[in-house]
Amino acid sequence: MNKKISLLLVSLLGLSALAGCSSSSGSDKDYIKVGLNYELSGNVASYGTSLSNGAELAIEEINKNGGVLGKQLKVVKADNKSENAESANVATKLITRDKVVAILGAATSGNTKAAVPAATQNKVPLISGSATADDVTVDSNGKVREYIFKTCFSDSFQGIMMSNFAYNDLGLKNAAILTDTASDYSKGLANSFKENYTKLGGKVIIEESYKAKDTDFKSVLTSIKAKNPEVLYVPGYYEEVGLIIRQARELGLNIPILGGDGYESPKLTEIAGKEALNNVYYTTHYSSKDPNVVKFINAYKEKYGKEPDAFGALGYDLGYFLADGLKRAGEADREKLKDALASTKNFTGITGTFSMDKNHNPIKSVTIIEMKNGEATFLKKLNP
Image (cartoon, rainbow, N blue to C red; front, side, top):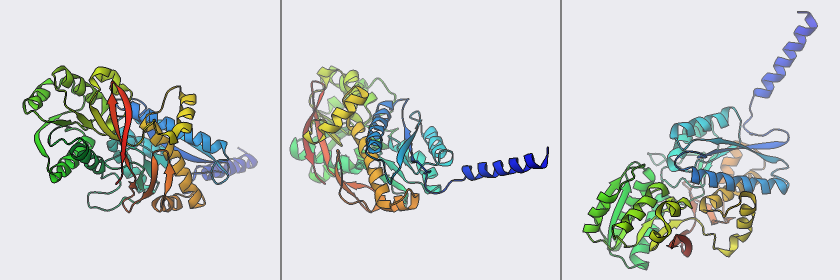
């Protein structure tokens, strides 16, 4: 090898090393990288796909309008397969390999919490639009996780609002609760519902449980029916909830069934059947019947060929929330972005206007949906 070639190789290696080095910006000359960590396959793929669709639609619109800080946003998307371990792996890859400025996702609380260590250790903002567990942004010691944010309300808030609705609006004083013991989400909603419902003067006369992926619920539903409750609270995800509602109606348990945003999927109707989905109410983030969201609905339908659910709307708000934070940060710097997100005041999205509280949770209203013959209809909004 002659001297000139040797010097050339040294020079090229040096340039390569520099190219591999990352700044805290997650950006380069032309674009800013944004990581999407979502459940695109697996048992909650409906949620992750909708969130990803919404976020990508927002980012596409932002780029068409000039981008952010004079740069285009570049999406780096990965499938966490609805698994905690894979969500942690995806977060690590997005940070260390792809050098993203921030991560959007995951969809569920469990998969989001699995990604928290990588985001925290590497000081990368992580924003979930749907991880409702109270301990996503706050650790077990009550300390706020500095780089973790949510744009959705928390489980405790959902449970409180639905118990208020059951007791005050529906006038139901005796409740049964059916909880998924394998789900932090389900347990969190059940606990807050029970605590507030009893404070209001209501009685929880029976509590039963199941586990994710169960398919036969007739035994627990028979036990519940024997106690003659006025209302059944089932905070869970659509796959099991659809079967629970169908089997409850088959057993003649026709009382109101209440739940949370885990009901928010077109697949709920496919699983339960239209006839079973009457006298069913749930808390969620948004209603497509709101006239203020027509533009978003039309854009989503044009791009994806179907009407968005609440998770699509939450993903859409995530894209614009991130862009808003970057603008206020003044540059694509992770530290400055984190500070900008924490100081958010009166951000207006299609799921509502919110400000970020001291625990990195938004202060926003909750929507009550009523199911009528399998159709989700807007009933009312409840303010915090």
